[in-house]
Image 1 (cartoon, helix red, strand yellow):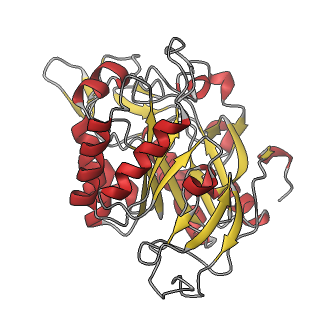
Image 2 (cartoon, rainbow, N blue to C red):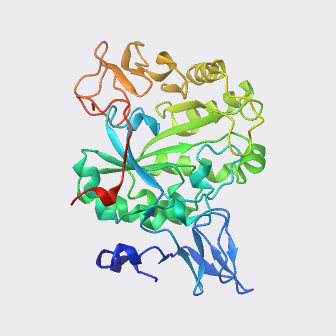
Image 3 (cartoon, one colour):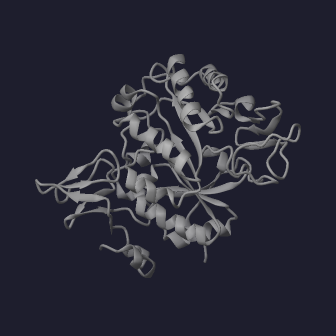
Length: 374
């Protein structure tokens, strides 16, 4: 059943999973090209794109997972990771299935590489997601676990429903998207953590099945043409994207193209999916990457997926006082004024920061929307 966007609120969610999309065009050979992301999948009737969730039905490209999720969980916002967006708060997180990249190291491969619709156990309308976030006191909802680019229409509708409830929207994404859908999508996002997977075309092509340049274009767009709060994450894989030279180039680019106030998180790889033969990232590699970033002018650089209170905490870039102490996902110190300036010297701390901070802590709370009464 194809349901147009303006009809979705009226329809029973059990009938909605397939909806038409608009970023597509007919080719001379009869195939239809999907224009959502730079993969530009060219499809015959009945074929699916690489992402698995967008395919050709009834002579158009459709999204086949609208209103279906691989699960909901209330997380600390720091887990996304976002350290300068509503610190200490909770976020209602969910994803769907599929992905438009093919990263050999995928840490969420059971969802992002899923070809089984059975993984999409939860049915949820945009309005029910917004109501659930409000019921649990979550100030934001995150599209995560797999990339929201591929469930573009569903994510936008959820974001709109959340905004009607005063709830913000967060995209956790690889940023692999074309220009026009990018403009539409980020009209409805309040924050984004973009996974800058490496800083060479070789890495993106051979390890991720994509290209670096479209991601860099997304980052420039977010920083200079939107009000979306932006943070970056780079997962460092031994022998692949963790050299000092690459960290120098990456962090110089961030400062020059995005500015010193964009936080970056260096996170640890663990063997998974199709890279089981690689060792886990040594903590020292993350510490060195953080040091290189700060040396090159990035004011807020973090280590992740390791126990490192110094690397997880936020410091004033002027007087170096600890502004926000973190022990894993738990806030331990708060030395900011009500207007987000350093208690010691008055220097502003970049971000969307509320005072006092949230008190959610490190808890994770899986939930089933069907079991929550209206």
